[in-house]
Length: 384
Ligand SMILES: *Cc1c(COP(=O)(O)O)cnc(C)c1O
Image (cartoon, rainbow, N blue to C red):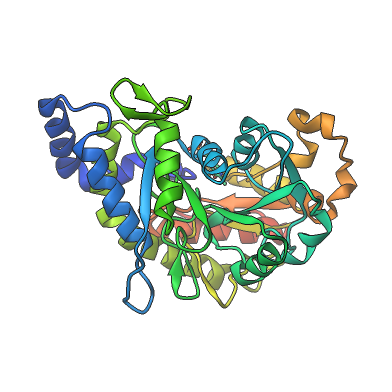
């Protein structure tokens, strides 16, 4: 029996940084520093500087406020830009529900926008038709690691005076032209859920922006609207980053660029191995450098492929099988499946192949073999 291959392998990652990580965790325990404090400040500064790195070597000055998770980050971004009850916020129809939950939590209504068939990202040409006098913001979700077409989105946003929020939960360190996610709009949100490209050992999240005022407002809201220990400017929530998670993220951040490079190499291997098959491979826009959170292909034989992979001990994923407009949670909006035909079609055809920095070339070859054999309707066999 050949080795099983998981979609992500967090144990493999831990084993590469075990000593350094254990020391960092021990230090926090020795200091008994648990909520916010110096570890959190340090990570916020490091992450702001990471997001501010330009491709040409220059740097943008960015600010970062950490919080408890990526969904809270979206909610906090809504509060920071002043979203209120009755407002509408545009969200792609194809994303994780967290992208929309933060909007509803802020009292506003998420309005879905169709995606592009090629990139699976929000279609800039379909934004304008969804804008009403109530529209206040657009959430650009950099899905699977690839940044949205920010120039086109900005043009629409400027015309209608809308805020643009990046949901960069899957795209830490990805570039659009010369700049990284976090520097591409009014404010950006990140998740450090363990399986994300930069993952904590529990839930964690952050907001990043060039605008210090927006970040200060989000930070205040995430900590009870507190200015002094017992002085509160307004009611907020409790959505803070643990010191332990901050220390863990500081260790991992040092490796993130090399991990992203590995993801990139594995994606290239997949593309080389599968380019002549009857399979739609990921399309990366010329202006983008993807963070390759997921390697998502498309095939009408999707379910057959998943079964064949499973038989061989290979785990694949579907991100996401039910589009937002077809979710029971949004039944009350009254959408029909065919309201977003591209989203509906691709959600039945997409498959995410295993992709993580520690994935070995032999595993990539085996995955490609099984996939090829299934597409050719043949029987997969190998000697391992
Ligand atoms: C993971 C994710 C979120 C939510 O982040 P959590 O930390 O899990 O709350 C939001 N949007 C997208 C696109 C995500 O992938």
